[in-house]
Amino acid sequence: MDAALVSNAQREPWPSPQDYPLPTPLQARTSATKLLASGLFALVLAGMIAVMLHENAQSAEAYQGWRLWIRILAAFGIAGLGVAILIAGVNAIINPEPPLSLGSAGLLVPSLYSRTVPWSEIMLVVHDKPRVKIFGPGRIVIGISNGSQFGPTTSQDLKPATEAGGLDAAQLPQMLNVPVAGLFARIQGYRAHYGRSDSAEISE
Image (cartoon, rainbow, N blue to C red):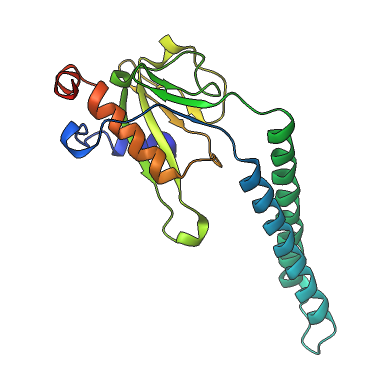
């Protein structure tokens, strides 16, 4: 899916320095608060489904067969997801991951690449927004040129280029302690001012 998203967005123009203020350095970490809140919400939702099923079982038109099992599986699935997210939140407190860093030299995402990726190699950035706002602010997907030079990891969020001259498709970490829209604008600002030689000259 990410590879297709990158492929479809390759025609987007390079951001202009006139459209973005000169950005400042940023470090973003996984937000334990967001993870814990999301996990608790999932558990509450699973509990509400369980209560509804219990009340329905006492009625004259109780769910039966596949209708009942679908709802039971949904409750267990949401509860399992909530527990997994809570565990991730606790781990974010106990063993915080290295931060995602933005600076004039480039973008460093330790979970994707072991070395800093220069802005000139980040060929596109896509803010993939959900159609329904209740599903959150979306995610950021980037297309990296020459990604093999920057120590790519085996993360499931990184899809290496499938052909010579192609782009790696990478999803930036989610649940960070900075807003997705703000991070997207900051990345675009760095690309505009430091990603191309003519942009760098303008920003100076």
